[in-house]
Length: 113
Image 1 (cartoon, helix red, strand yellow):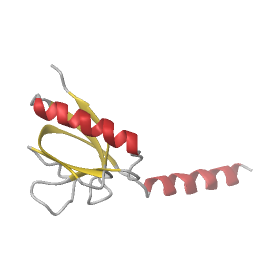
Image 2 (cartoon, rainbow, N blue to C red):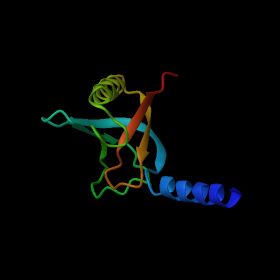
Image 3 (tube, rainbow, N blue to C red):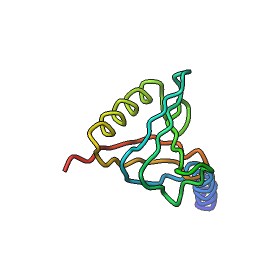
């Protein structure tokens, strides 16, 4: 029984590690680019995270419905938060999936010092 539980734990922990690699990054937003289909937004920052391997310079960080847990309502909330932060020239923090070269964002906070 203990051996079975140990094997189950090893299998589950291996499967989990193959998924998203959550990485935090902070910076000021320099560009917000919503797409016309309403399912994604591209955000660029004044600094890039070395963990984001997107081929553009500066890096593109995506908020996209169906990626990294983002829903249609979540996209709207993240977009409005990003726009408010950019308009106020505030520093933001994002959590993105560094296992993907699209660096899919699923959380964003605004720093109000």
